[in-house]
Image (cartoon, rainbow, N blue to C red; front, side, top):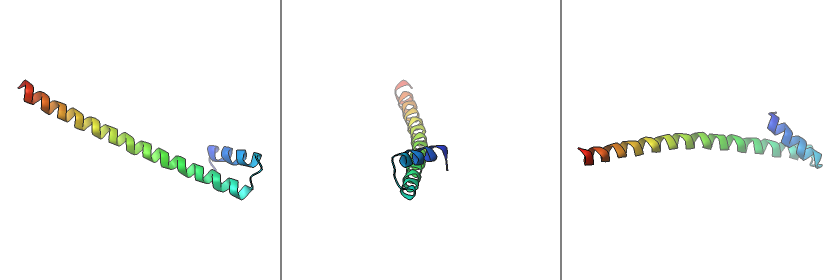
Length: 67
C-alpha cells in the first residue's frame, strides 16, 4: 500500500467505515490519482506540440511579410 493510500485507509477506519469498504475506497482514490497523473503527462505533450505549431506558423508569417 502506498503512503497516500494507507493514509486514506486510516482516515476511513478512524470514522468507523468497515475495513473492506475503506480498502476499496482507498484503492479507488489511488487509481484516480494514477489517471490524473497520466492526463497531466499527456497534456504536457499537447502543450509542447501547440508551442511548436505556433512557433512554426509565426516563422512562416514572418517570412511572408518580411521577405
